[in-house]
Image (cartoon, rainbow, N blue to C red; front, side, top):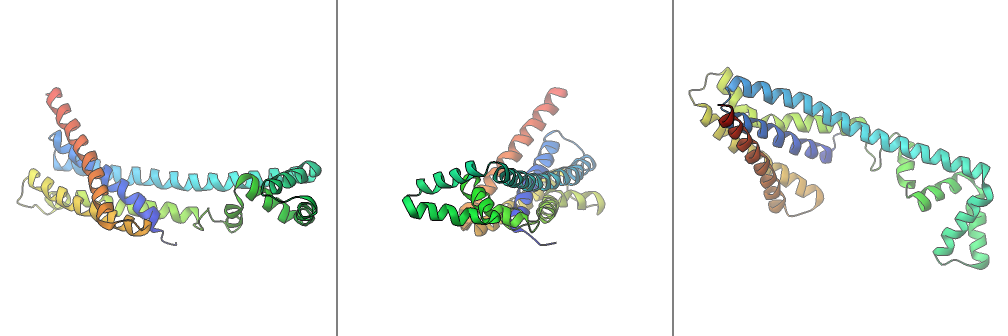
Amino acid sequence: MKWHFEDFVYGSIDGSVTTFAIVAGAIGASLSPMVILILGFANLFADGFSMAIGNYQASKTRIEFIQKERKREEWEIENMGESEKQEIRDIYTKKGFTSDLLEEIVRVITARKKIWIDTMMKEELGLIEEMMKEELGLIEDGRKPVDTALSTFFGFNIIGLIPLIPFVFLYTAGWSVSVSDSFLYSVIFTCGAFFLIGIIKGKIVKKSLFRSGLTTLMVGGIAATVAYVVGYLLSYFIK
């Protein structure tokens, strides 16, 4: 497996946000630590697996689409050669080529089938780079679909576990702290995770590390606040 930080960060953000939102909602609803752990771990494995599969399927669908388009272009060249030559001519006319030079370009490109297809894929569909990588079993930026899926899954589960850590110790190690104290620790741990994920994301996309960390922290905080309020209101009305 080749590790991909982009997908790891993607999974990490979603994992930490959704897991902490579940914790916050459960605390708002005054649920027991055991219920919080059940809901949290169920989310980690089910949602993490779902995200990984979704990422994998999206990547495979992209590859299959490119394959289909290439076969279509190949069929059109074989069965509608003159029409496809005219498309090449029209493409390079728009680029400013004329007269003998234009005809020479058309002749050179259409003399070799692969170059002809590649040119149509690039100029007509904008898919040539992706197609070349697809032939190696890769998606558009050189990543294998299975690697993107696994990176997403591990990011979701590793970072998504952080909001649950205080409750794991509370339930299994018998901490002499209250549920509310455990929730406070969860808030602190998760805020740190949010900020760290944002910094990593900022480094990858070459943005301000502090601003990226703060933005991710704010997004996670909003999601958690909404979940807590919903849980509290539901608990209040149910009672």
